[in-house]
Image (cartoon, rainbow, N blue to C red; front, top):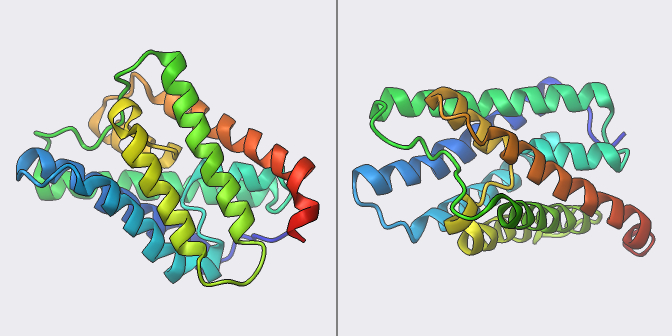
Length: 217
């Protein structure tokens, strides 16, 4: 198995997911409370992923995302047992980041909760497609040693948030949506932000395994 549960791996997954929600959703909160330009939000999400993938990737693979972990599970690169630990700590990281927002900003804001502004079918396609694209990029750029993997992954998050953020919030990540939703109590659409990214990741991983894996070795 490529990814295994170790203390450094668990800490890395916690820190990376915490940072993603703390900085990314924190930017959303500041755009509401302090007039931070909303144009900076996709940049902050993308930069956070880029930085922490480079910092922590060697310890855990820098999933920071249950949909990514499930994609690797389908690809037989992580065991069921280890994936449960990964996903649990990712969700915990997202929740504690949102709880930190409570301590810093109170509760008079959106918490960065992801919501749909299009119908469910359109939103599902956008979230699944962009998560699938993210998973495909991850599977491609982490096959061999290179210096662009963090930029490629963070850049995909940035582009996705820029393109679909207005319509779905550009989650691509159940932990990023679950944490703010549970802490804020705004859980009405939480099922959507679990299913759409996971299905997109599974489709991408299956396509990679059947169509591209031979060319990537």
